[in-house]
Length: 195
Ligand code: IMP
Image (cartoon, rainbow, N blue to C red; front, side, top):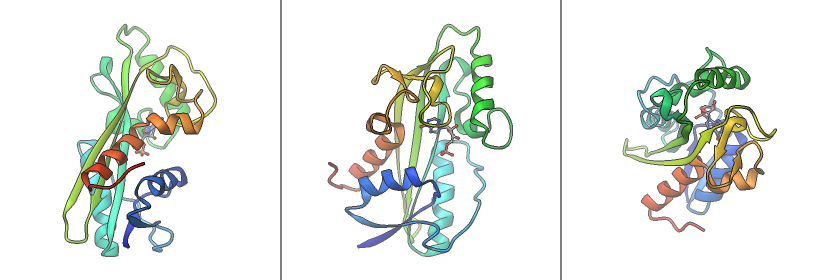
């Protein structure tokens, strides 16, 4: 089986990717490869950032590598916070500050529509890249609801679930998540069987 190194240290992502691509690839983590790198996300899109991260890991290991990049895209803010979702309120990964800034920026906006977007990139040792994207549609509430999830989940009301991602169970969220859809699209591109 081909080894696939995941360019993430996030256990939830590892689990999700294992479920979808584990039948075809032997999933390896950065820790198992003894790699500890902080790759700068200098791309202009989710896809570019995913490719940058995956290609660094593919070069370092000489193996297949998979990376994802995701964020929240809000129509009334011209697509912001977009690729800057993690650091919308400034450097660091402060979810609480990011939500407060988002609610503030959205205070006078009537159009509340938004989507989570995920791009995944699979980079082969020969430099070949396969890219796929997925999205989850919803809207930005005026206040936070729910205690689960992470990031912008408490203010993202999912059209499909009819509740916020923070009110949903992990299973419910994962069934409709942008990341899940990107991985499914990637699996389809690789002509994999997905169940
Ligand atoms: P990353 O691609 O994991 O680095 O995520 C970038 C940022 O986008 C995160 O720090 C969150 O702010 C936001 N984000 C991405 N996916 C989600 C999600 O499923 N729920 C809430 N926020 C998310």
